[in-house]
Image (tube, rainbow, N blue to C red; front, side, top):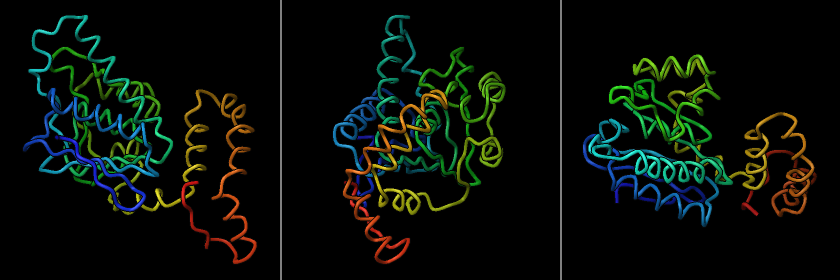
Length: 247
């Protein structure tokens, strides 16, 4: 399968390896849907998405688009967006690691993750304009949330490549030249239920909507073994000595 899962303790690692260019074709899309479906059915405590090879991905195999009717294309995007939604709503921290060129579908997957960690050698682009298309796996709207509408339009309209340093300055790349696996593993070992609550608050559509969620999501944490154990550990041994099990 193009996407394969391995585990490192509490961390699930989803790795793309599909030829020299990691092009997204029908097999890659099917594998992505299958693996994300499994993750959604049994969420891990943390997820790292990465790729093997010379590039993260050189984009989508254009043969996928050949002969598509508007209805068939709409069905394709609907199914892929369902996968994107399942990925971004996983109740755990998600990290995408980009070591090199990262185009179109792969970049859109990265934007659905909580954190985008990139090598300073990485470059990014939503280059669908080359075939008269707009990015349709949620990239423009998610990019706009991180970088602002004008920068998102600039990147998509131009079809140009942008380096990791520039996108770090825009707030799209969250960490530059750090060990993505070490970061993801550290987050996965933390208080998973509290991280899930944080995710719901940050991803709420407005500050008011997030405030309205606080009594529910923060209140529920007081029934978790992790909070009860960490409070006891703090009072007994001081800060920073608690361990968490995700419960």
